[in-house]
Length: 137
Image 1 (cartoon, rainbow, N blue to C red):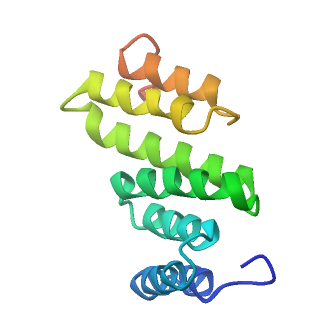
Image 2: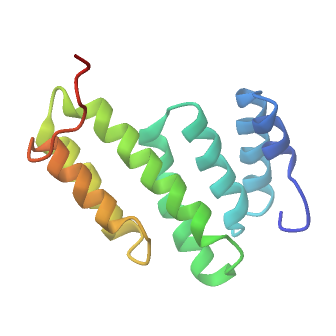
């Protein structure tokens, strides 16, 4: 929807996540080759903390956008990175190496992204090689 704000994003900005998701899905159904509603779906899922669903949506966005070339790479990049960090943080307490593997997906999914150094920093955090938080005294 590069000509203006989509209904999905309007609903998202208003905090109406279920309506936003339904609208993004409807738009994606109308034009299955359009990466924009798929990216919007990913952004909505990110706002809902449904990280494991964001990543496949971003993967699909990247595939579709190779032909269409209409999506903003920064939005794709930031959405993917934020989802992977959130998902990995949620995973880390029970499975540190699983969290590390999630962060490793960043380079595979979006190799031209700008968050590679940050992804590596998160890997070091999950492995306990970098202190993440400073305790208050």
